Amino acid sequence: MVVILKQNPDKAQLKSLMTWLESKGVSVHTTVGAQQTILGLVGDTSALDIDLISALDIVEAVRRVQEPYKSANRKFHPADTVVKVGNAEIGGGGLALIAGPGSVESEEQICSLAEELKNAGACILWGGAFKSRTSPYSFQGLRGEGLKYLLAAKRASGLPIAAEVTDMSQLGLFEDVDMIIVGGRNMQNYELLKALGASDKPVLLKRGVSSTYEELLMSAEYIMSEGNGNVVLCERGIRTFENHTAHTFDITAVPVLKQLSHLPVIADPSNSSGRANLVAPLSEAAVAAGADGLIIAVHNDPSHAMCDGPLSLKPEAFGVLCRRLEKIRAARDSE
Image (cartoon, rainbow, N blue to C red):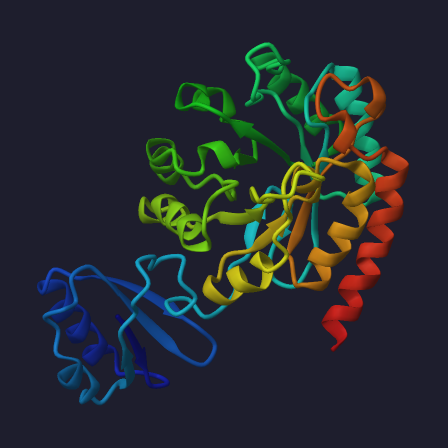
């Protein structure tokens, strides 16, 4: 249930209302906007009398919310959320470009690449240290050593860093990582999501290949229900009958998720297609559709990459793409 208050509500009446609501076993989440204050009621609201609440002097309107996700719901939080990652921001009208190699291979590799990506326009450095691979015989990443190399690149370039966690046992190694990525395979690893919710570290939550929009938002709810509202949603492709690409990029997810939720929405054109020659057009489509950012695989030498080479751009191609994307974003926002 959502209670929309009139402008400048009487403080004593507001306190009395919140005390009464909490006495009914309902938790109250307050959102203060430029024009309105909204009370989001979470819990069993079936016994609350809407007419009684509506009759209060400070109340503008009362609405029931049918969706099971509350904290992530735009009805509870009409203003867009901006997630800060180090000195970068995702949401709020800008275009956040997260870039890096599918796998960190050496300190020299990631440090030299970080500088190139920063100069091209990336605001967050991403690199794989722990890799979730379909085959147990594929390269699984440098693990803790890879995170050390990422931190060295952070010190050298000044870019905040993001890396994917694949198991709860790894969380202690991510203390100095600025943003934790939850991959599609772990989107419904609820114990991991709750553990991430217990901190305030930003989380990039990728959609599972067979997951609905509501399931993605419910996974975000697991994180937010523990107190961490720093969640970014990511469309990374879904499984369909088409096998020409690794997955099918669901462009519809970008505007739909932004309508349903106040959380920033970004896209992963690299893993969506699995093909480097499709990254640019998919990136352009995502930005035109309203994406708050992109996460793009970039490698110094894709043909010799230890993993994800076929879907990775070279740094020069990434720089060209960044300039095109900025023009699209500017044209989109000028309308």
